[in-house]
Amino acid sequence: MSAGKKTGMTLNVLIRRPLIAATLAVLPFVAAIPVKAADPQGPVISVVGSDASSRPVALGVGKAVVIELPRDAKDVLVSDPAIANAVVRSARRAYMIGVKVGQTSIFFFDSEGRQIAGFDIAVKRDLNGIREAIRQVLPNSDIRVDALGTEGIVLSGVADSQVDAQTAYDIAGRLLNQGTATMTGTGDKVVNAIIVRGRDQINLRVTVAEMQRDVIKQLGVNLNGKFGIGSAVVDFNNVTPFPVNSGPLVAGNEVTGSFRSINATLRAMERSGIMRTLAEPNLTAISGETANFLAGGEFPIVSGVSCSVGSSQCTPTIEFKKFGISLGFTPVVLSQGRISLKVSTEVSELSTDGALVNSGFTIPALRVRRADTTVELPSGGSMALAGLIQEQTKQQINGFPGLMQLPILGTLFKSRDYNNRQTELMILVTPYVVRPVAQKDLSRPDDGYADTADPSAVFLGRLNRLYGVAGKTEPGKAYRNQYGFILD
Image (cartoon, rainbow, N blue to C red; front, side, top):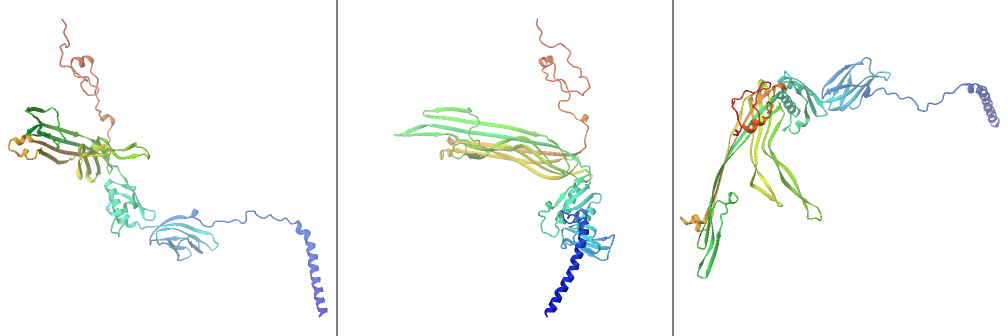
C-alpha cells in the first residue's frame, strides 16, 4: 500500500515537471506578442428596429392591410396586440388588422435578425361611412374627413358655400354620435376646417323708426285753512300728490284764491308731446359671420360696495350697461342667390319706472323693445318687422275720503292725474349680396364741400359753397345785382 502511494506521487511529479518546463520555454514568446487594451465603453449596441425607420399606417377598427415583404420573414414583433395584430400567411405576405382605437408598432425580421420592415400603426375610427354620406349629399364639394385623436374628426377641403360646409358639419356630427339618444358633446368632437370657395359678403341696410306720443293731464285743488265750531278749531291741509307722474310736472300753473280763512290753489296742466327716433345702420359681413351695431350709449350702475376693514369709507363697484338701438345679424348665402338672415334688434331707453335705489345710489331701469327672427330673402328683398305697437294708460284720482264723493263740491277735494303713452316701432331690413368696388367709385359725405367766402357768409348767410361734381365748375349765381349796405 505504501509503495503504491509513493509510486503515485512520483508519477504526479514527473507529469508536472514537463509542463512547467514547457511553460517556461514559451514565456519569452508570449511576452513578445502585443496585447490589445480593453474597450472602456464596453460592447457596441446596435438598434435593429425603431419608430425612426417605421412607416406610418392608418387602420380602421376591424380593417386590414396586406403587405408584401421583400425577403422571407422569420420573426414578427407586435408591441400591443390589443390595438392591432399581424398574421403571417406565407414567408413574404402578412396581414395587419386593427382591433381597437390606439397606437402600436409592428416589426418584421429575417432569419439573421435584421429588420425587414417596421410600421407605426394608428388604429382610428372607420370614417368611410361619413365620407360616403358627405360625398352623396355634396357631390360638387371636395371635403376630406380625417381622424383626430381617439374620438374626434377633422373636416377639411373646399365647399361651394357656407351652407354646404354647415351641412357637412351636421352630417359628421350626427354619424359620429350615431346610436346615442342625444347629441351632447358632438360639437366638441368635430373640427370644421372647411374653406368656403368664394365666400360672399352681405350688406344689410336697416331702418329703425319709432314714434312715441305722450298725453299728460293733471287737475287738482289744494285746500288749506281752519275753521272753528265753538271752542274746537280744525286745521286742514289737502295737497294733490299726482303720483302717476311723480308730482306736478310744471310748477307755476297755479291759480290761488282765498275765502275767509280758507286758501285754495288750483293746479291744472295738460301736455302733449311726440318723439321721433330714426336710425339707419349700414353693415357688411361675410356669409356665415355675425355683425353687430349699437347707436346709443352706456350708463353706469352700482353692482356692489366694498368697504375696507376698520374704516367707514366704502368704494362702489361700477359696471356699464348698453342702451340705445342695437342690431345683430347673421347672413348665410344659400343657393341661387337667396339669403338666410337671422336678425336680432333691440331698442332700449332709460326709464325711472322700476328704478332701484341701493346704498344711496339710484339705478335706472331700461324700457326695452326686442325682436328676434330668421327669414329667407332674395338679394334686394326687404323684411318688415311692423305692428310693434304699445299703448300705456295710467290714471289715478286722489282726494279726501267722503268729501270727494259729493256731487259738485267734491271736485274741490280731489285731484286727477292722467298719462297716456303710445309707441309704434317699425324695422325694415334689406340684405344685398355685394362685391368689392374700387375706391374711386366710393363717395364721402364731405366730397365737394368748400368753405364759403366771407361776403357770401356775411351778406347772404351761406355756410358752404354749393355741392357739385368733382372737376366741374360751380354753377353761376342767379343773383347778379349789388348787395350790402348803401351809405349816403
